[in-house]
Amino acid sequence: MGPKITESDSLYHSLEKMSAFEIAKAMNTEDQKVSLAIQNELEAISKVISCAGDTLKAGGRLIYFGAGTSGRLGVLDASECPPTFGVEPELVVGIIAGGERALRFAVENAEDNALQAALDFQKINVTKKDLIIGVAASGTTPYVIGGLKYCNENEIKSACITCNPNAPILQMATFPICISVGPEFLTGSSRLKAGTAQKMTLNMISTGAMILFGRVLGNKMVDMKMTNAKLRQRGIKMLMELKNVSEVEAESLLDRFGSVRNAISHY
Image (tube, rainbow, N blue to C red; front, side, top):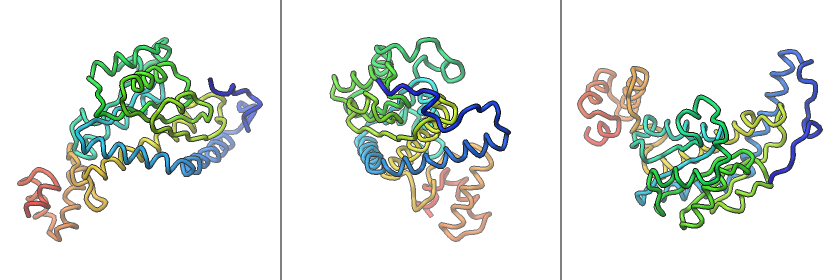
């Protein structure tokens, strides 16, 4: 189990006596510590990026799982990959304890079921080709512990993202990541610094993996799905820059070929 966090561990007390500006300033001060904590784990994060890229190239999937805020962040990151990189929704998957209802509401005892993650994995036919990433700020969530145990028992590659240096999942994952952000401004509220750290780390993993997977050209999202006017206009501007054509010509290319990458390849 992780260390017990008490009021004395926090740098802030009597929050109810603070002004709005004092609250904002103190929270901003704490948030600035997150990127520095991540900097200390760049080597560990790069190993996960490399493994994720290799996994996708070999026909496997990137699968996040977690409970509460951590689970929601995994689902969020997974849901953003198809529109950003033009991949199929099944390629990057987010699983949250308690199912879809848990995205909007707290599902009682969902995170305490150590056996449910294995059942959730079996529903989507997880195999040795996949990379599983358990996300848990405390690193003590039974749902995540059970899922990583299942991975070990079935020789499935795994990683974890936690903010607790004493988390048991650090000893269970093939590729452990610990972003040690310290006590929260609001004691125990892991949706704050811990949540930010997890979101930033997930951004790095999915974006890095997609770059290695070949879904980026230069620094452009050439495979993005242009599902609205803003994204279509972004695609037009990409073609104007990359192919040195007018806006009218770029728009015609998009209509003809359907994507920025196809337009570049065929023009």
